[in-house]
Amino acid sequence: MELAPAQLGQWSLDRVHAYDYNKGVLHRGDGATEYLSQRPWTSSTVAGTGARRDPLTCPIPADSSSSPQPDCQRSLQSPVALAAAPDGSLIIGDGRYLRIL
Image (cartoon, rainbow, N blue to C red):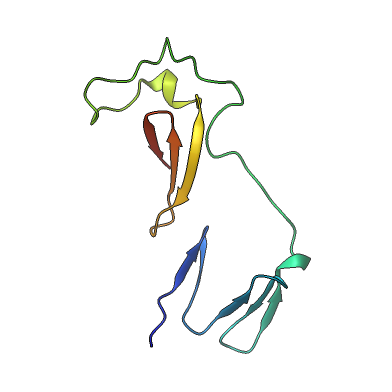
């Protein structure tokens, strides 16, 4: 059985790596071990401004293939879902929009 690499954020696990989720330990194929609990936690804002988007000033376009207006792209109205795509991009379900970052 061949295992495919897993994409996790901006880094990936190769076929020869193993990640122990419960202990937060990454066993690398070269014999090295990384303890993720000892690495600093970082976070950064990738979408939204902290202010909720006004649904009246940012209407849903009639043509589903068109993008939201530029002012409407800066804020989120009602984010309900978040997913990571295989290419590393984030997909945010925001009301009736799908935002791809």
